[in-house]
Image (cartoon, rainbow, N blue to C red; front, side):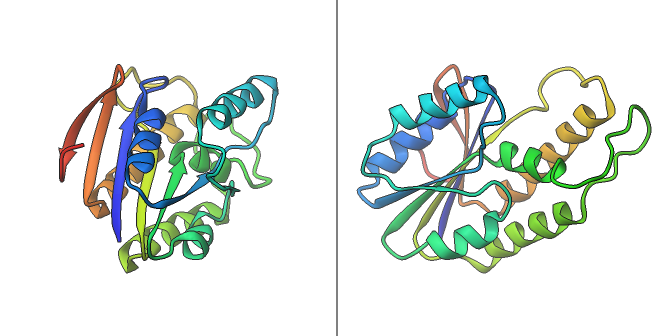
Length: 186
């Protein structure tokens, strides 16, 4: 398996970069979407992404069970594009019934640790085909206010480090421009 992690801030061009690399690969592409429309603004974002993708790319929606979806969708000769890890992380952080604290320690649902470990295990085991994972780089700004926001920034940073260690290529995108941090040039 060849895995590429593409990092960047909001509206940095990371998804467009991932889509360009997928299109240029010449492989059959499956788009694995982790977002779900919880409100009108998110529905608009999803529609924007859909309109930009080639119509012949099948879309698989999976907001929680990412490792299982990768096992099903990654096959020889196919490229799977996951957009994005940070939305998936948010879904996992909020999938339980635990109340969100106003201050103090945030308890994450048991499924959070299970799904995170399963993703890292599947990346360690290797998958047939090619994989592109998109994730937000959220750790370059100020420390967020609020327990949930700080925990999210921490978890996203730790996840990005773990995935980057397993990826053969890591690209940081800023202002639509790629900076290869690890592996082959774009």
